[in-house]
Length: 288
Length: 296
Image 1 (spheres, rainbow over the protein chains, first blue to last red):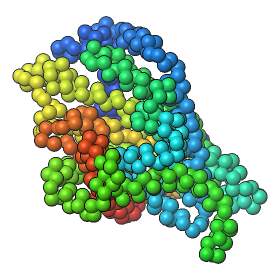
Image 2: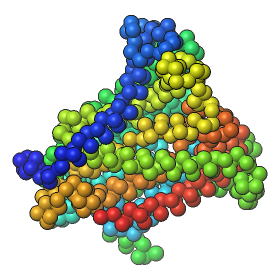
Image 3: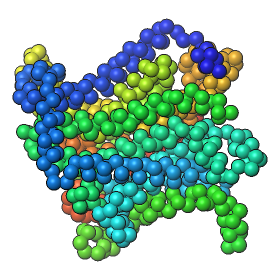
Image 4: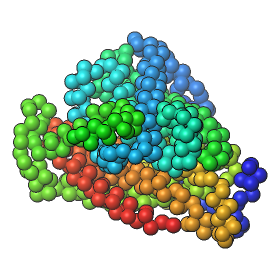
């Protein structure tokens, strides 16, 4: 199978290949340079942040921004590890619930035929287009009605109802899971529950790994806002946000904070991405 | 009624599968949307109970609020440029990357996706385009003698919109991009083999006759993401050009909504804008859906 995959390519013109490489190269520079500067900023001593003409590379790279940051964090009366735990818990519980509930719903929407299916599909689609910011107040009313203000549930449970994931999973299940495979499993006496977890989910692994990345990205950036007011329940980005709110003198520390804040989702992405690529090589075959 | 119960009983597995998600979805998405639509017909300052005012919020938007009309114009312009462009970039990059060897593919995917995932990394652009001589762009242009005094990139209305667009495009290879990559890799190689036998000769034919039709679902998904992102843009614009941009040059509808909702506490008025924006997006989505059906 591997051999056939590598030979399947239809003849490519060299001119086209060169044009594509140039285009990709330009794109890569546009994407990567600002990220590179953002990282460089974190390793510059404070006096190098404000010089003329500006230098892209730090002349005397230093870790002092990071050590300053750790010093500041060590002074906070809620231990940093607690902020970190809050963040990780919210992200993990939120993503897990969204993947589990969302994938079950997506499977039924993709492969079952029942009344109300179109209505649900349309509701999910249209809900994506309503400006989220006006929903904050109604959501606040509902959460306080449920008595969830200042609990993890106020951030975790609404994340379970995020529609993007269902939408995405439904597409992949419709597309990648063949009906004949499901029929065969049903004839063998497999329950729908078993089919979902043992047949459908392994095939659409790339989809839910992608969904985990998206959830992580969403929830990791959440500062708790109006739903959490206890200091010891606040997530890490909130604590870091407090530290960098200290003006120009903290510019170096702020750069270190943004590097840390971006490093975490990128790490999760890299781990998931290697898994996505691994599953991809075989998905066409298992799908048949 | 009896037919309803029969259906419910017969399809109970399906309903049990969708029920948990729908419950959360209804509670935190559908009900809040319904509340917001209701509030759009009221005066609600979040302290007194809402007072019914009929259509007057909607009338005021068009008759009394000049800034809203500027925001509408900016939003349409911004969406017309960034929507299609970001969509095209997502697909083209995903497609080109997909042709490469796995290792390079992984590196480039990370490189292209990183800006959209890394929270507030886009703030680096405020350093690049900073209005004083410490800004990278100003610094270089001054050093080379191309300009003789710093350009106020983020304050001069001639530059604000183009710069904001460049930054938003930089961050736009997000969800759709990842979905396209996953979708492209999920296409069974058998289709390409069959295509080669049936006389597909080059990559463009392969793209049009095999890849795009196989990607239809994902293309639709990406289109909706592009539409919502481009019409709802607000945060990055505000972070770059401030809470009261010069001549409202980069002021969009969602910024106006946030302004009325969270600064002036006129939730009813803000909700009316959200409803109008929602209707616009649904119409645009319908149009795009019709166009996408013609592919392949």
